[in-house]
Image (cartoon, rainbow, N blue to C red; front, side, top):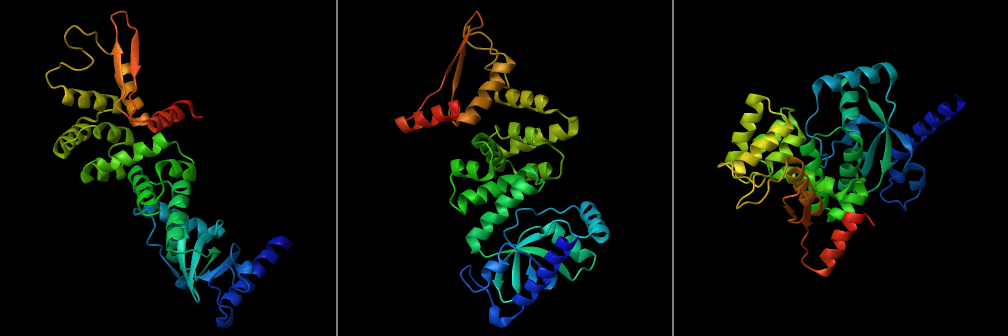
Length: 302
């Protein structure tokens, strides 16, 4: 109990320090910066601006109300994170739900971790922290990955290390952004799953994507049924790759689906051939020695 009281008193002391114009901290090298940066400080809610880099754009009203009720009864257990913009001015890095819920119940102050960062660092912190901590929908995650690549300049390999996800996982999310915006909205609203979306990505025409999307909604198609419809779309005559042509043996479902997964994981046009006795061969092309090394790395994980 004494430890908690001491921590709260320290927070109040730091709040007073931050409101002193003669101790305006703008960089990590400024006097008293070491006392403030990384510490929990009680900040006025009015001094905190919403983060324009926030990847989450949908906030469920019901869950926000539940969080507000919890904060009213138990207090805010996890502080928000802010960055310092100027004298007594801050910007959210993470914790917008907690910030909104606290405002909703009329709190005047909120506990916060203070960081000092430039715009690019703030963008990266906000995107990475939200991807890791928040229950974002697949499209929001994809948009966050895209921003980290485009605006921060991370490669997919570096991004994989930064967020702790396999590169193939990141690639699958990014591919969702090829879908028509109507389908992206349907995924965000929960009408279809990411599995449905991954199937529809294989349809190039936006018009045909919408047609298949309407079939999924209207007939309540499963992901596997959607995959079958997409295969049928590519082979309307029924002469599919599975059925074979010119006497070639049929490629079974497991092989066709596995081949598509392999192409996505390796990001290359792998080919599959199956002989009459059921034995098969996978061919993986490469364009250069460097491309070959990358393929080996992805396959072996070494």
